[in-house]
Length: 168
Image (cartoon, rainbow, N blue to C red; front, side, top):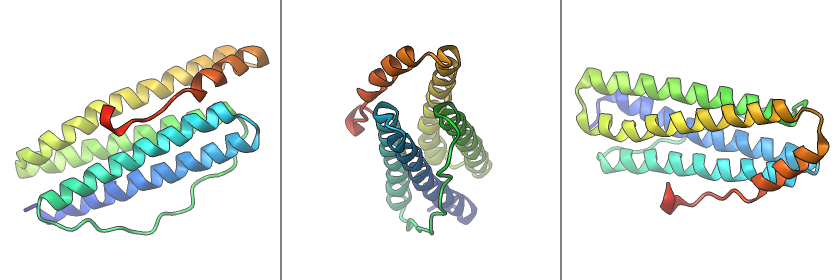
């Protein structure tokens, strides 16, 4: 059985993961509207990953004998000035998620809930990868600048990205 404060925080994080998926789909829609299908694919795959994270928390809550509670998801930002801005917003979103998992870890540690501490460690490791990935894409996009040929090649590379739950 989970402490109520920790349960509420896990439910909030589960909902935030689904919001993140929603936000990445909005980024994909922006990219698609500008004919950047490769970047759109990147964000569609990112949204799949966030839904996987939400389901992982959902399963954990239920495995602990509690009920996952879903809340409404606010509309995400849908207008961007550039592809670079989508990645900068993605990084900011991932940094917020990292902060949220730190807070969850603090609650689990305070309660000495070792099962939850173990569960959250997977997410903490995942967040290091997520932030690093967005940092790298931002660096690349800044280097590419206005070079449309290089941007085209980079976009084609991102078009091949796929998310597979079995490999997560």
